[in-house]
Amino acid sequence: MRYRTLGDSGLRASVVGLGCNSIGAGLDLARTRAVVDAAIEEGITLFDTAEAYGEPAGASEELLGHRAGAPA
Image 1 (cartoon, rainbow, N blue to C red):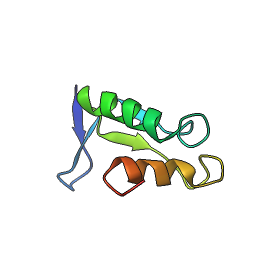
Image 2 (image 1 turned 60 degrees about the vertical axis):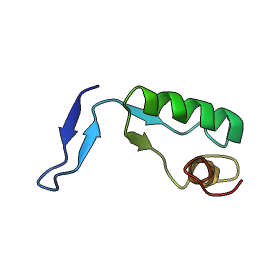
Image 3 (image 1 turned 30 degrees about the vertical axis):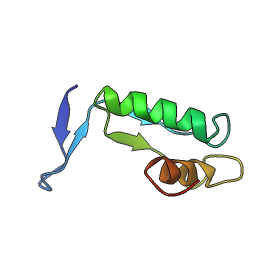
């Protein structure tokens, strides 16, 4: 995976990101974990999400938070 530095921050992000608009709309927690784990395994560090993603709105960010370690 290639990475780019974000401005002068010293932070690096993968040049490929994962669009998370189907998380919470088409993917449940188990599938979210599988997709995110696969992305991380490939070196992806950029996850594109928004408060409006998911059903109801915000479900994408909530499931990503659960994947990151919060209880389901």
